[in-house]
Length: 176
Image (cartoon, rainbow, N blue to C red; front, top):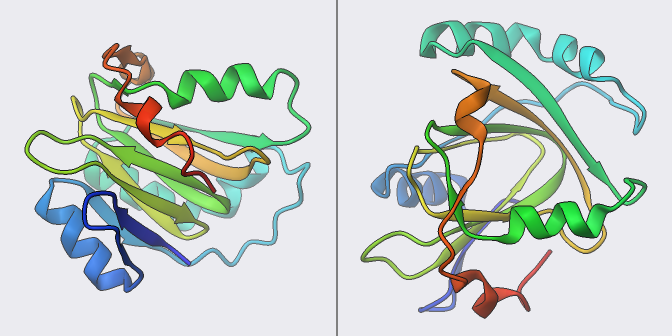
């Protein structure tokens, strides 16, 4: 179940419409799509993109996105802890970070100016668009299992720009 956790009030939201409204009020786009495809752990990037082409292609065309790829994070990945550390550091991007979760789950953390830090546990079916310049970090968890389609205007825009704030250190105990 998709959840949104507010660290200051310790309130957890579980209603998809309420989560969508909360995120929208902070400029973050959130939708839920169907995920009917049955994907194996070994499913290739081409297989995953083909399975969702009927919804992905019109979405990309309507919003000016040029390319997509697949991130498949699981416990069998070599050097996962090192990879995880890169995602766990607060950063921004020079373009929107758009992810469609097709399997598993991951935790997006947000540190927005004037707002208490909050996180969204995204799972299969969740589409989230983190606006360019938004301070955030991502956790696939200590035992990762996430397949997500990454959608780009320009893949160079995905390069992380680390803030160096280390605010994420305060929240390391909260994970999947």
